[in-house]
Amino acid sequence: MNESLNIVEFIRVGGIVPALLVLFVTWMLSTTLTRFTDRMGHRFAERRLVLQQANTVLRFVISFAGIAGAVMLVFRLSEQMLLAIGGTLAVAVGIALKDLAASIVAGLMILFDRPFQVGDRVSFGGFYGEIQRIGLRSVRLVTLDDNLVTIPNNKFLTDIVSSGNAGALDMLVQVDFYIGVDQDIATARRIVEEAVTSCRYAFIEKPWSVLASQVLQENYYAVRLRAKVYVLDVLYEKALESDLTVRVLDAYRRDGIRPPSMLLRDVGEPPRAPIVRAVS
Image (tube, rainbow, N blue to C red; front, side, top):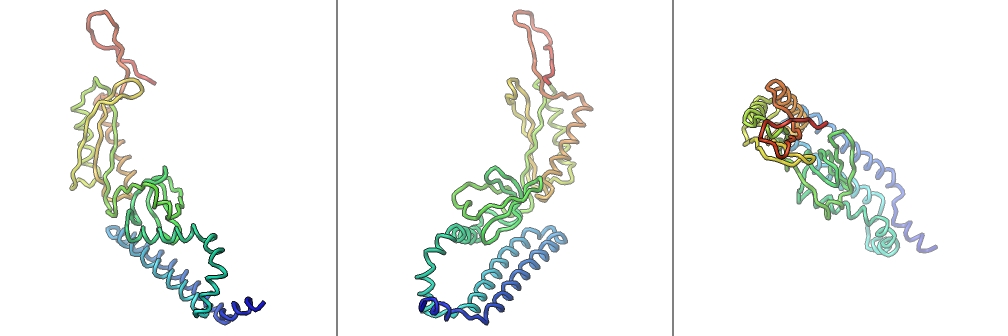
């Protein structure tokens, strides 16, 4: 009974309402800052990633300051109180908040070590998309089909994560096209090159290339033409892929360049033109 009274003595009853008000203001500031950053990011696209990264740092500072202020208002932080809290609640809180504490520490490590940043296109755990937010507990990733994936921060300490643009607006994109081994490879490659140079989403000031290679596809050979080009902004990744695909396939159809097919040749007969049979 006496221990309960001693613990109550450390609580400022009159500070509970101000503490709740501080937490509410903290939440409002964080929300307003995020909305302001989003609006500025749309207005100044070239500064969008910098603004989002600054928003992440400021939200961390605001959250810690708000929580610290609320604790100061509610509790009388004396040596006796620290001993009471440490002795009574350390084990229970430690077990209950172990994962949360690990995620918060991991969030700080992500913030300062910067394996990826807000706005990066990353691959993690079978998901690929853009980092929308780095929070105290988790990272929010928006996939290209607009699904929101929430990943605890501590997962990034042990698993491998791949960042496509590493804080930059532009990013290298690969788009593959396949044609038959008996087609005009030089013409097909020229078509892809022209599509790259005329694409409005392509950042051709950076090095780009179209590479040809022979690959085995479904038990028959094909020629793969791989366009490697930087996109102006990661937001246009799929727009670039779609634009190149439409341009190249239309030109292939116009110039009679056919997709991969199985070439059947009779054994034991004099050489003759191969019989081309499309595989459905």
